Amino acid sequence: MSTPVHNDTTEPLKPSNFLRQIIDADLAQGTHANNRWAGTPGDAAHQQAGALDPARIRTRFPPEPNGYLHVGHAKSICLNFGLARDYGGVCHLRFDDTNPEKEEQEYVDAIIDAVHWLGFDWKDPDGHENLYFASNYFDFMYRAAEYLIESGNAYVDEQTADEMRANRGDFGKPGVDSPYRGRTPAENLARFRQMRDGVLADGAAVLRAKIDMASPNINLRDPAIYRIKRAEHHNTGDKWCIYPMYTFAHPIEDALECITHSICTLEFEDQRPFYDWLLDRLAEGGLIAQPHPRQYEFARLNLTYVVTSKRKLRHLVDNGIVSGWDDPRMPTIAGLRRRGYTPASIQAFCERIGVTKDYSWIDYATLEGCLREDLEAKAHRAMVVLDPLKLELTNWAEVFGSGDHLEPCSLPALPHAAEGETVPERRFSLGREVWIEREDFAELPPKGYKRLFPSNRVRLKGGYVIECTGCEKDAAGNVTKVLATVVPDTKSGTPGADSVKVKAAITWVGVADGVQAEVRLYDRLFTDAQPDAGGKDYLALLNPDSLKVVTAYVEPSLAAAQAEDKFQFERFGYFVADRKDHAPAKPVFNRVTGLKDSWGK
Ligand code: ATP
Ligand code: MG
Image 1 (cartoon, rainbow, N blue to C red):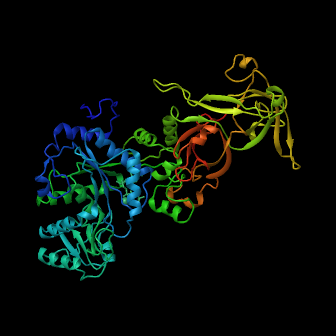
Image 2: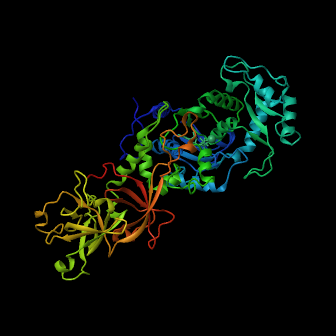
Image 3: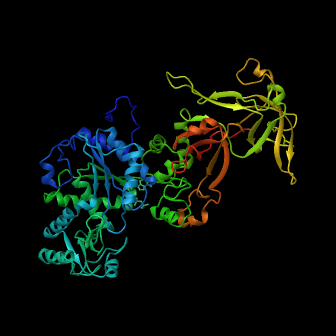
């Protein structure tokens, strides 16, 4: 077995997969050893004039700029950019903007941002950026179409759409030749130029590849390759009124960019014979460099509890069901980022789920697990109170000499020190009044309850042991304040602190130095694990509790938090200072995910 090549020798070898095996074999056989690359995309003559390609492989990530990228795209990004990185290659970022109507600059910017944020770039070894727009290849695509016509491999069909559909046949039935199929190359060329020159109406004719109307693969039954569409294109304006079909454009884009391994999702498996047919014809004609790119398919990511169709995501945005493409509940990369996911956790997730040809669903918990693993050792700990109830230590003045006394306390900010460093500390103070979680007090404790109830003792974490003496209530019987006494000489970290045994330590925040904060408790957007599978109406499966906003108190160390800083709020999980709305004077934290081990009794 051949060994994968790594340009970073400190990295452990990645587990192999079928794509790595293909690349290993290509490298061993020198399949692309003689590829030339002129530094920019172009036809055979252009590339031939270039030097030997310094990139050992070229892959590409080709999004259509018609929406924000989602977690499924992240899989494709990590795969394509990851393979290029691991094999001494380059991955191009290519905007597949051949469809004139849908592209927007906002999406282009967001896509560039998302791929960069995930940790990738598209530079050649010499630093040249491989960021391309497929619409820049329209001239070549047109030339390729004329070449197919001249070589007897394409014809202009003027059947109606209905006739074309009927004559295509189906799985059991071969297609029927179009009456226009026998036109001569000269007739086809003249007619195709009329299409280009705007002589024919939209939809009046299409250019079709001339392959085999009886092929068992319906995609080879003379697929359409150019259509007439009077539409303004964001890049080429109204230069064209004919546009290439995706299945024609995509292989050409790959070929012009000297892509070696064109990796796509399994839906395109049946298109591969056409991909090869087209590039074989263009290579024969000397239009594109050889060997031409090869297409390989893998199974797309299906993640539970989310939808990943851009159309459905757009619906959620356009109808105000979420606050935008970057709403922290969205499975978009911008949404995951705002939610608090890290690039490392998403990369680890893509690595973990692997690459196969098998259709499967990945549990959302796998993604959450990757985030916890990334943050466990890194995220500073902090205490917060999400559902505040005031507690008064009624003997405070007696014990400390003044009701206003503040006792300095501290706890480690991390469970372990990083190598060569000491564990950072967080400081806060304990005073006469503290905020505790409402659920940490019970006037009548349920069986097994170990937290605060009259006569019971608990430790205020990092502070003193206290003993509950009762509570105050309003007219409706709601508890408004818990009363307790502090037990002297029990401060955490002081000699003898443990002489008083308690069964629970509760989290708290001082009333004197606690900081008020908005905390957004996000949950799954859908209640169903597969909200749009099998024709289900995903809009009927929205989780009404996917966002709960609370006013919380957080410990003073969080006053210094910057947007996107991540924390572990003790007992509640991982939180992030919101990328958009957080400000030191008005802190806003988002819940990323809970802790694996849920809070005990
Ligand atoms: P949608 O159908 O939601 O519009 P798309 O696949 O058409 O998504 P593109 O912008 O064309 O979106 O996708 C860019 C690349 O991302 C393609 O190569 C596609 O194969 C890949 N991709 C899209 N969705 C997934 C997914 N769920 N898993 C893996 N790769 C994906
Ligand atoms: Mg698409």
